[in-house]
Amino acid sequence: MTNENPIIDISIFRRDFQLRNPSVVAYEAMDFAPNIIVRVELANGLIGWGNAAPDEHVTGETAEGVERTLRETLKPFLIGQDAARIEMLWSRLCQLAPNQPTAVAAVDIALYDLLGKAAGLPLRQLLGNAKDEIETTVTLSIEELPTTLARAREFQAQGFKALKIKCGLNAADDIERIRQIRQTAGDQMRLTIDANQGYSVAECLRVLEAIRECRIEFAEQPVAATDLEALREVCRRSPIPVMADESVLSAADMLATPASLVNLKLMKTGGITGALKANAVAEARDIRAMVGCMDESRISMAAAAHFTLAMNNVVYADLDGHIDIVDDVAEQGILLESGLVRTSEIAGLGLMIADAVC
Image (cartoon, rainbow, N blue to C red; front, side, top):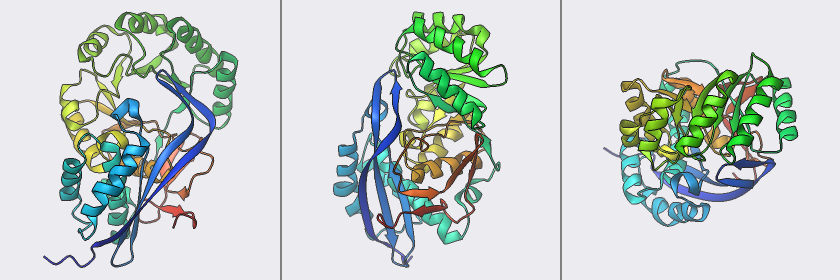
């Protein structure tokens, strides 16, 4: 079959986005967020946008490595290819860039943007269109208690109804912070916690038991991602549901997780194609999913939002990765108001990209 609209050009841009507030979690502190933006152009003039937000602690990838892989390995392969053959291209990209899901995600997202634009439809409608909106958590980093409580009040005033509390550096401090946040936010605020692998099994169980009365909805990746037995022990003994994050990067990992909940991130799964595969396994195993994020441009955040709204099995969202970015290159795509996530009705990802990048 003739490929009438091959990929004719791919441009790659690195942006180190400044963050309005430092992002502090158990394994790192950041003042800026490296993102690598991908622009894919077809012979018919359509342009698709993708984005990579690497986190070495999650997938082992660095910004420098992702940019190099995109320029030197993936771009030469993709020129001349049929952008509509997403499944075939994803498989080949995974072979060309093994263990580099964030690099693959940048291209995969751009291909889905092109798919929606070619169809003249918002991407969520092509993927399943399960719901119109979803409530998202907003993240409280690890900071001094007065700062944390002030941010909690600020988010509450903005209409957010769910807070994600980062923890995992000091168990005793975490217990006090979580109790104080519950007292400040009140009974109606949904609370989740995320230790980002920071606890031992004993520490984790001590914290979870101590905050039982705080009505925490779930605890995310409390122990090391590489220690499934530790995660299994926590899941067995925890008084709070446990969500896997860094320990689940793929559909294969989904088969092994002992957790009853999982955080799907496009940067971990290799984009939308990989997320579709991982979510299918999760649903078959009766594991409910959340779609989360890194500190990301609206480009990939829009892709995450479209995927979230399309999937019936995705019942939680943590889609706040763009709100702290000062100098994003994109507008629209993902719409966030009063804690509710929607997507633009423009075809594809629904983005408007700054002229300087185009």
